[in-house]
Length: 571
Image 1: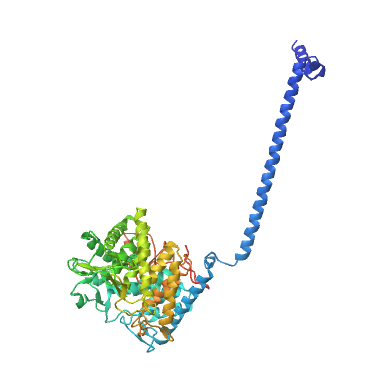
Image 2: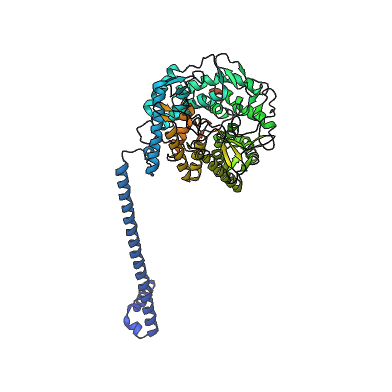
């Protein structure tokens, strides 16, 4: 029975495949036609989508093939070029030519020193001999090390390195300026170490720093400013009335913190940071300190307030230690002190008439309408610090002030017959500026600020100003046997000294003014006040006591190689 039902059921299903069934039932025929058309449309649509998809895939494959071909073309051009040397490409041919001109100036200055004053502190180009202005510490040699390295002058750098290794001796019965020795010698050696990785520079830096340390052994921790390198007895200059000088006492922090980081010995950092802690306890509301401070009590004496000589770099280092410390909470008090000082600086700012040159006054009870060329470091400092303000409006305000001050400093140069700046300027109502002390000793401060402003704003005007200053040096200061300063920027009468900072700072900043921003980038390096770049490292306030007195070996920051423009930092 079950089998018969199945057969009958199958016969019932097959009737739907018989056309006669639908001819007798037109409604079902119409339904079948509609179903057929619907299914056909669905199938056709899917086929159409598939064709579109295949077309798009084909287009993408063609694009991938084109990009692969482009990549192969790039590889064929650069297969023998390292990633670092690609950074050496100078897009602007004018900048490239100017870099080369500055490099040639450095070669001329160095060759003259090498020929007439090798191993001595400074060259006297007119008499073609040398003079030991700093007790025979090889000031020009050490000051120029990093400039030689950055410019890619390998042969000259290696020869200087051999002199440092074999002839540099600090065991001298000489009363050294603690400030000058720190910024030039300690800073120069540490920079050479950071750039090259050669531990001889770190060993020498440690030697001279150890000889300077007794200067901080005062009742307050404010250091004496002069110390005998052989015997270690320290004192202050008699003309300062027994006081310590603000800039001389507050411009060692970068170098000694860096030395602690690189040796693992905390004693250097502890000495210099105590100075800031002591000053911060009674830091004035306007952040402006007089230039004389009692080393026993740490109380400022009644004296001049200035961003020029004897005050300048104290304020500079408040900012730069904050940058060098990775802007962390451990160095926030440096930034706080600096911002307070910048608010104080605003109280010293005036404008001349009729040309509205912005300038920074000195203060000794009342404001004095005088500004040192030394104070022309301030535009660069303000530009460097502007981005650190929590309020963007404040940052913009100080950057604008930096640009106004830079214009004034540039006009210190443009206002004289030689187009070189005097040592200081006075401002008088109705007559703008007039040169005071009229010598020029190849100072770098204005060029330094132009470098910072160019790097931080990208405004090529600062390059043009810097180039005009370089050409003025070439015209007035270059002689057959080196570079000299001018006794008078009005007459052009020459002196007989090639200052070591001309090689350390002036020529370096001019070179970097026309270099790619990848050469000593400002987010990786901090320049000390003698333009010696120090590599920013992680801040460690404990400075790993287990590594005390142990040299921390490291790889060079740059690869030594042949290059056209100079060295580029490696990350």
